[in-house]
Image 1 (cartoon, rainbow, N blue to C red):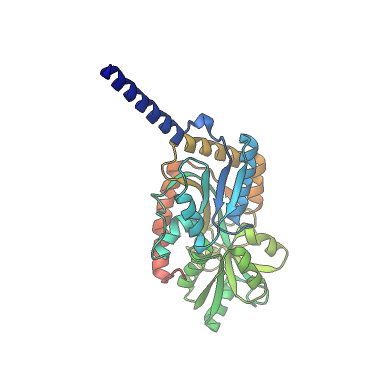
Image 2 (tube, one colour; image 1 turned 120 degrees about the horizontal axis):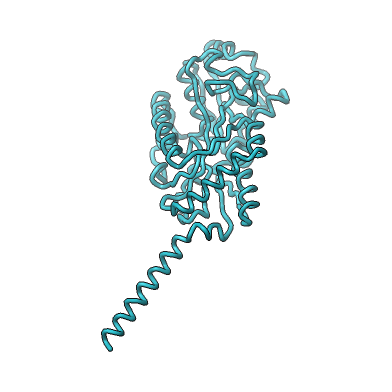
Length: 327
């Protein structure tokens, strides 16, 4: 009787253990069975927010589950990224990571609350976009060369950003290093807070994400002097690159990628990746992104991880050379 009782207890323990394991890592076929949250680490209206909402709308339609877009701005995107890093690794909490939150901030901040690589599982590179150097219409310079000459003559300029560590910020630091112009960084809590001061002439310039400023340039409210990619942007081929307009070799591309918390089950990551690729390749979503100045990508997890590592190395050098620090 003792042996039978012992065996029964052992079988029960094994069954409970298997059930717990199944509950902790649901089969990919069951995913998603509840709403998904996509965290955006900046305020609404910017490129990462636009991408997240396009993805969320289509994912919800395809899977029949609500997709909640949760804006958690602050600390150069660190607040939102940290929230996801510490969330359950089940595929139901994701983040649209940026070049700042996942490659720049490690060098810029004395201590991050998360590890840019170890705390996340890469899903896919979503899109890239150049930044565009925009100035207030009162600035007399009409070309990049004129603007550089003006900066060197006047000796003092200010540039706005959507926060420390963003591509908007380090684009300015790279420009400052390459031109030798004395420039003061004015960080804001998101792009939406910076634009009014730029439009009001209270700051001189900004390296804004193209999707955010292109409409203002087309409306004549801001003047564009150059884009930060090595080739002209398809959405605005009339705007020269900064490299061709006077600073050879200048390049600072913004990118946006989908990450999940580390240890998210691979079958769930694979299902997310397949869905993202399907959405990015759809004709209507692709056109909407391109019209905004965003280049849809879609990558493997391995490709994203390799790209992230190269970006970490690149921007660590820029931060070191410029002496930039998180204010």
